[in-house]
Image (cartoon, rainbow, N blue to C red; front, side, top):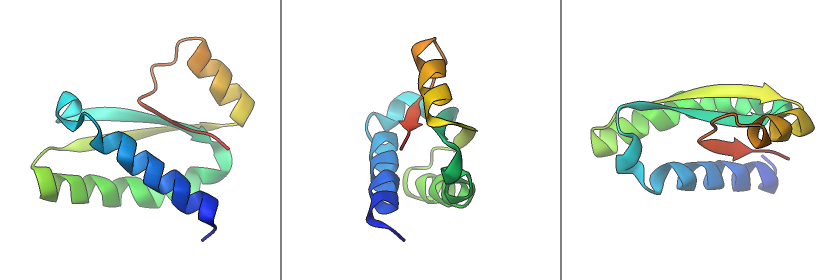
Length: 87
């Protein structure tokens, strides 16, 4: 796996950990660049399972994938993203 993918995974996980009590038992929206779709399809359930085992809090992660420019524009225009992971 390329270093940039590991960096994205690390940043994503760190963003989930910061202020975690604010979103216990809630859904998060990860707005990301389309080529990362498969990565997050595998990562999100694994992270949710890990997080619940460690904290007892259930976190569901929803995904929104698209072109980097389109996703950035959606967030700028008000899409309520909890995490933004663009290339």
